[in-house]
Length: 126
Image 1 (cartoon, one colour):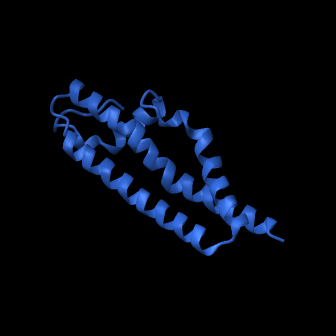
Image 2: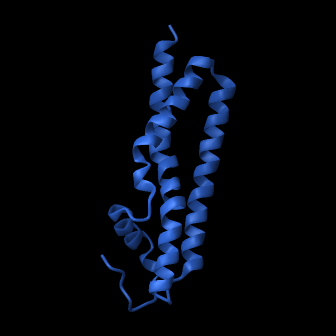
Image 3: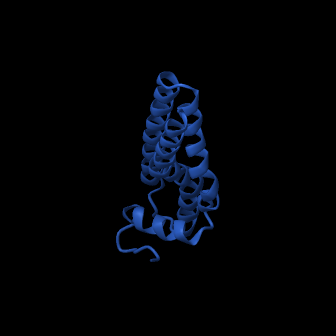
């Protein structure tokens, strides 16, 4: 009887981690080193603006993740709680490699998202 709740909660945890948690972890683990690297490569790069954007994303995602996790743990039984946590882990583990700053996809996305941090007249490398 609790099996559908387990799998439903696992899907919910997977979707939440994919939509909110993984992008925040990518920003934390990948964008910070990339921003530091861009500051050394391009002295006019606005590192404070990039850090503010990264901090905003990480804090907002952390609040959402903690709030939902506390609600799930508080208001569900053991099976949905374990399913939710299983879904979080299932979404996180395959995307660990994506969280490195040497990932080409992350570098291209960084250049696009943080293009306004570059000094005027200098376009990022797309």
